[in-house]
Length: 368
Image (cartoon, rainbow, N blue to C red; front, side):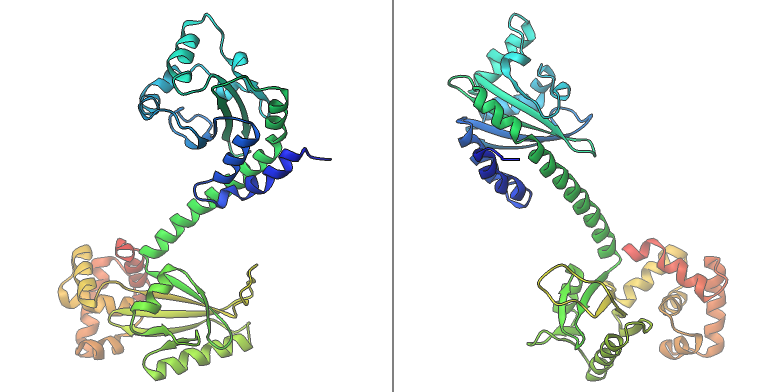
């Protein structure tokens, strides 16, 4: 199939428009010039949404601000154009959409379109499978659009439809990712991808923050992950090298700090990224607590109605300490620690330490 010259010229800007800011700015400007129009607009709306709930992009002379404001506040309800009834992929001219002599149509033309400089208008609708519609509109104050203009508008339809489908899929993934990232951020989890020698290849926002602000993890001048103290640094690098050498090894968990809490899970990976960066050998999942141990104990005491001493023990046990380790950490005898733990289990309804860990880690405190 041989494409018209104007369509070939427009395709790069149409395909790249989803990555521009503002969206499709280059395409709309090129299309306006190709159509000899004063104004070009691309409007997105999901089926069933009110006419004033749109993503509206344009090039050229905008509508007067007052008229635009009035349209979005109430004039949209009087808009007689049958947007959703337009045959998908077909170009329509204004004389096909408005009926002279009908009061509503005449009022809309005289009181909105003409003051906006839209004496002549062409519009085309396309839709992607998820239900998102897009309308490509061109207007001018001068003469009517001709058959050549109509042909160009129609010829661009399949490519606009593909661009819309990709954009809608990209927006859905962006939304899903933002929700997941927000949840992960609230749980204070981050990740770093590492090369076989511990070089940091990439991070998420939380991982980057931990590298910059934790005081424990950092990236040296060569880009390698480092840790303080030196014993911890050697343990991490040894684990990364071992996991890189044997990708079937089980993940390695390392406690980086107890107050504030910071731990790391090193996992070998076979994932490959389609990018210029080297493929990672290990993913480091890092979990840090933004709150001090004292604050966490206060929160636990409030949530589960614990005494301060019980809250301190509950936090220690939830962080994986044994009774003996917690007793040493808190300066208690083994017997006192066991007595406290029994009271904690009773108040939480836990049947043992695994239950306690689940109750604490699945409570709202995890997202505090």
